[in-house]
Image (cartoon, rainbow, N blue to C red; front, side):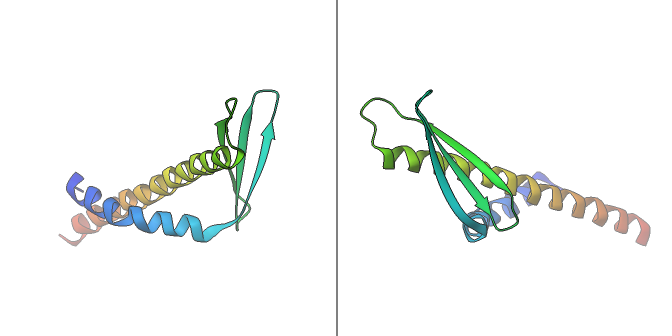
Length: 105
Protein backbone atom coordinates (compact mmCIF):
# COMPACT_ATOMS: atom_id res chain seq x y z
CA UNK A 1 0.00 0.00 0.00
CA UNK A 2 1.38 3.39 -0.88
CA UNK A 3 1.76 6.24 1.59
CA UNK A 4 -0.36 8.43 -0.69
CA UNK A 5 -3.36 6.14 -0.24
CA UNK A 6 -3.01 6.01 3.53
CA UNK A 7 -2.50 9.77 3.76
CA UNK A 8 -5.54 10.62 1.65
CA UNK A 9 -7.76 8.15 3.46
CA UNK A 10 -6.48 9.36 6.85
CA UNK A 11 -7.15 12.99 5.98
CA UNK A 12 -10.72 12.13 4.99
CA UNK A 13 -11.27 10.20 8.22
CA UNK A 14 -9.81 12.76 10.64
CA UNK A 15 -13.02 14.80 10.77
CA UNK A 16 -15.04 11.60 11.08
CA UNK A 17 -12.91 10.60 14.08
CA UNK A 18 -13.67 13.86 15.86
CA UNK A 19 -17.39 13.38 15.27
CA UNK A 20 -17.20 9.75 16.35
CA UNK A 21 -15.22 10.54 19.50
CA UNK A 22 -17.69 13.26 20.53
CA UNK A 23 -20.68 11.01 19.82
CA UNK A 24 -19.26 8.17 21.91
CA UNK A 25 -18.60 10.34 24.99
CA UNK A 26 -21.05 9.59 27.76
CA UNK A 27 -19.88 12.34 30.10
CA UNK A 28 -16.88 14.39 31.19
CA UNK A 29 -16.10 14.92 34.86
CA UNK A 30 -13.54 17.29 36.32
CA UNK A 31 -11.37 17.16 39.42
CA UNK A 32 -9.03 19.83 40.74
CA UNK A 33 -6.01 18.66 42.69
CA UNK A 34 -4.85 21.61 44.82
CA UNK A 35 -1.63 19.89 45.89
CA UNK A 36 -0.14 20.20 42.39
CA UNK A 37 -2.57 22.81 41.00
CA UNK A 38 -3.74 20.45 38.27
CA UNK A 39 -7.20 20.21 36.72
CA UNK A 40 -8.12 16.73 35.48
CA UNK A 41 -10.80 15.94 32.91
CA UNK A 42 -12.08 12.37 32.84
CA UNK A 43 -13.72 11.61 29.52
CA UNK A 44 -16.04 8.63 29.98
CA UNK A 45 -17.00 6.71 26.83
CA UNK A 46 -20.14 4.60 26.39
CA UNK A 47 -18.08 1.40 26.34
CA UNK A 48 -16.60 2.16 29.78
CA UNK A 49 -13.23 3.42 28.55
CA UNK A 50 -11.94 6.54 30.31
CA UNK A 51 -9.33 8.97 28.99
CA UNK A 52 -7.75 11.51 31.32
CA UNK A 53 -6.64 14.97 30.28
CA UNK A 54 -4.90 17.47 32.50
CA UNK A 55 -4.09 21.14 32.70
CA UNK A 56 -2.07 23.20 35.17
CA UNK A 57 -3.90 26.02 36.90
CA UNK A 58 -1.64 28.97 37.45
CA UNK A 59 -2.40 31.70 39.95
CA UNK A 60 -5.21 33.77 38.53
CA UNK A 61 -6.37 31.03 36.12
CA UNK A 62 -10.07 30.77 35.55
CA UNK A 63 -11.46 27.34 36.43
CA UNK A 64 -13.51 27.18 33.21
CA UNK A 65 -10.36 27.74 31.10
CA UNK A 66 -8.47 25.01 32.97
CA UNK A 67 -11.39 22.60 32.49
CA UNK A 68 -11.51 23.41 28.77
CA UNK A 69 -7.78 22.82 28.38
CA UNK A 70 -7.95 19.53 30.28
CA UNK A 71 -10.90 18.39 28.12
CA UNK A 72 -9.04 19.36 24.93
CA UNK A 73 -6.04 17.36 26.14
CA UNK A 74 -8.27 14.31 26.66
CA UNK A 75 -9.88 14.79 23.22
CA UNK A 76 -6.45 14.88 21.61
CA UNK A 77 -5.61 11.57 23.25
CA UNK A 78 -8.90 10.09 22.01
CA UNK A 79 -8.18 11.26 18.45
CA UNK A 80 -4.69 9.73 18.56
CA UNK A 81 -6.15 6.40 19.69
CA UNK A 82 -8.77 6.54 16.93
CA UNK A 83 -6.10 7.38 14.36
CA UNK A 84 -4.01 4.42 15.48
CA UNK A 85 -7.00 2.07 15.21
CA UNK A 86 -7.95 3.35 11.75
CA UNK A 87 -4.35 3.15 10.53
CA UNK A 88 -4.14 -0.43 11.80
CA UNK A 89 -7.37 -1.31 9.93
CA UNK A 90 -5.95 0.19 6.73
CA UNK A 91 -2.69 -1.69 7.22
CA UNK A 92 -4.47 -5.00 7.78
CA UNK A 93 -6.71 -4.39 4.74
CA UNK A 94 -3.63 -3.68 2.59
CA UNK A 95 -1.98 -6.91 3.76
CA UNK A 96 -5.15 -8.87 2.99
CA UNK A 97 -5.46 -7.18 -0.41
CA UNK A 98 -1.83 -7.98 -1.24
CA UNK A 99 -2.28 -11.62 -0.23
CA UNK A 100 -5.52 -11.91 -2.21
CA UNK A 101 -3.84 -10.32 -5.24
CA UNK A 102 -0.97 -12.81 -5.08
CA UNK A 103 -3.37 -15.73 -4.57
CA UNK A 104 -5.50 -14.75 -7.59
CA UNK A 105 -2.54 -14.91 -9.95
